[in-house]
Image 1 (cartoon, helix red, strand yellow):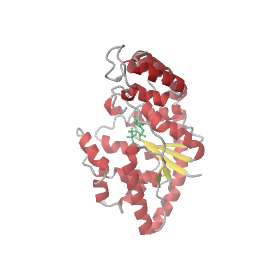
Image 2 (cartoon, helix red, strand yellow):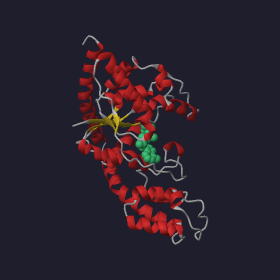
Image 3 (tube, helix red, strand yellow):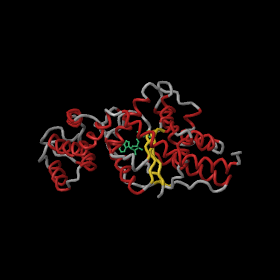
Image 4 (tube, rainbow, N blue to C red):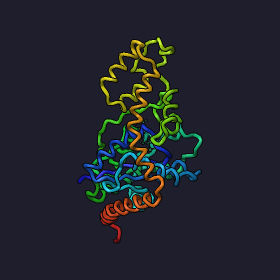
Length: 328
Ligand code: ADP
């Protein structure tokens, strides 16, 4: 079976954008691939090194959301990146052959430095973010990587690093390809992309009254100021979420018509959406709760996941050291 690695940084509770844009797909992939899913804590420290007080708790939240969403520790390896030391070892090895220019030119590097001006990201490690990410992927010799568009620049660097390694030391790594999956952009309640850093997210673990409260105040097509104003679903972020979470095609046609003719109001439309999101989140929250009170189970999941990951990681590192001519 082909191996796949994917990861998320432990930045706190995950939202329904993570669910639709990544997790639902990850759950499907565990049926057909040998999947390795890492909570990449070293990556989180690269931008949050000055205040690490929430890393531990955030790892726990991500783990709970993953298990809730249906990642099954019997089918895939779920682990914390720092528990498998080979990630950092391979990153160091790959760092030997990575030209600085590749990292300095990476579009996300410049973008992040501009966007996160309250943090000093002029560090050695932050520049090397794509090298660690390449190590994450190549450690499992993954041929395919399920990542969103936002990560494609990083994946390109991973491919170039693999190619360069193979050129210097002989064929060791496959060049990982993007596993193209439809990943819908889920907007947040203010209409921008749903993101933790914008404070506009509906979290997987929010309780129902909280979700309704957020949805009720969610932005809609600005043309619908009054109930009697017709609207255009294409301009409405609530509609974008319908597209992702509402499987009822007939109902969606009705909403489309109702919105354009002012036959239904935004609150009616939001109530329907709320029902679909509720139906989707109920089993996830139920599973999440079962793990919440069981720290022992969470430990088991992480221990078992790291053991499984380490087996592959060690083999790769032997091959890497042999290829690089180290004394093993
Ligand atoms: P990271 O954890 O690497 O910092 P993010 O927190 O931005 O990245 O999200 C991880 C992944 O979840 C993204 O690569 C993307 O696939 C998915 N994702 C995040 N936010 C959204 C969203 N609003 N809509 C769709 N997918 C999203």
